[in-house]
Image (cartoon, rainbow, N blue to C red; front, side, top):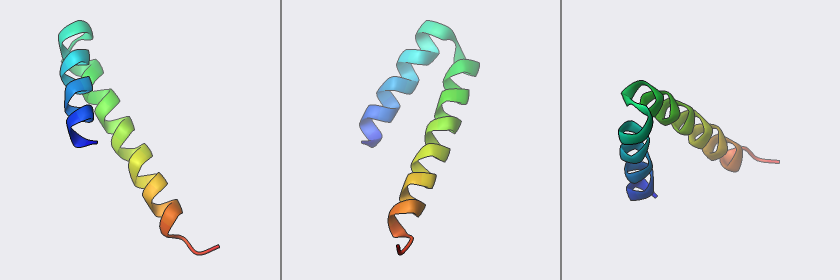
Length: 43
């Protein structure tokens, strides 16, 4: 998964610029953290 994220970040940085890539990476990090928290929360 980490390799996929690195590849997508590099692609975005190349095609759309560093700022867009950083924003995408931040959003992806938050999404993954929220998903992980949901999986660990007892139902």
